[in-house]
Image 1 (tube, rainbow, N blue to C red):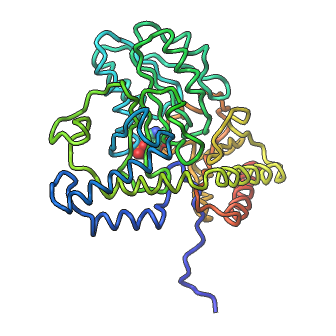
Image 2 (image 1 turned 90 degrees about the horizontal axis):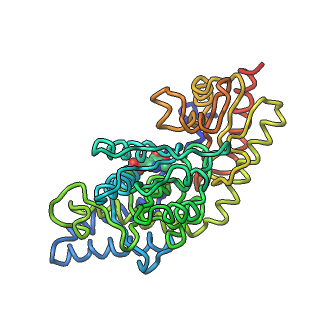
Image 3 (image 1 turned 90 degrees about the vertical axis):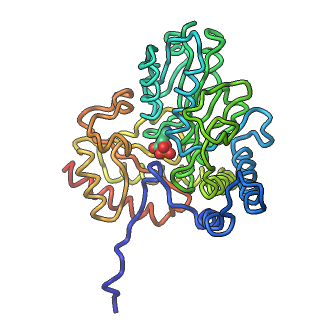
Length: 388
Ligand SMILES: Cc1ncc(COP(=O)(O)O)c(C=O)c1O
């Protein structure tokens, strides 16, 4: 007899917005809440145990980002990607005595753009670094926008809407040749666990990460800060993390992020392959169904966990809701742009026609072949109903 109470099938393909916490990571978080619950600043055994948890997590994250023994820089634990970006842009900018200009790529996350806007409140000028037609920041763009007054340059490693990968090392080298004291900040929130990240080779002074994008808990992130690079803390207090971020350390979150970072780098190569095959299958299904669509940033280097598709004559939001009603969860452009209902600056920057509605389909470590088979059918069917 059919189970009338069975939950309808739901396929979650919005992993660029957030991911389900991995069961092993949840176990680590839970242990830190229930057992290793001491304050790492306490001198007794419970505090020492909690401090050890942080050390382990710092080692796990450091290995995942290519600085295993911290010889190139240090990790500052934060409340997530937004705070890490704010530290890398506003916190770094505030240490500059002479600089008056912040250059920010046109496709940055609002966390970076708005931190640059806050520097403007201190009298700085914000200048946009343009991207090319494929959504990638270029050396020519850096040459045009960075000058000797530029104190901060922010360019993201992987874009959250179209997953384009920027040549950070090259851009940073050109920027430094023009403005030797510049602080280069890189938002790698969508990069960790999706492509190889090596802070030692990236060329940035600070790099932002967030746990919830890699099957870790929400509300925890990290900023990697290169040796010699400086940031001004946002608040004072007990002097934790060498005074760079006072406040009792979020031990469960930090331990969870460490475990998530270790997991993310373990099977990265095979996951990348799997995600690329999912994207290829979805594109092939749309082609076979004769749909009118574009793959956004098709010719750019991209991280494989995001597929951004623009469908002709398909308004994104109604399409999204049709998909949701049939059990497929994706996002329209990006989660942040979605609620504001404004055209996405990223899609505008790469010239996606206004007649097209864009869906961002993003995969996680738990996405399966069957999920893609199911999603392909629902997606092609839904788009066809709009286009016919
Ligand atoms: C590229 C990028 N940067 C920063 C953030 C902000 O991170 P958090 O949600 O952890 O504050 C996000 C999250 O959407 C992101 O995708």
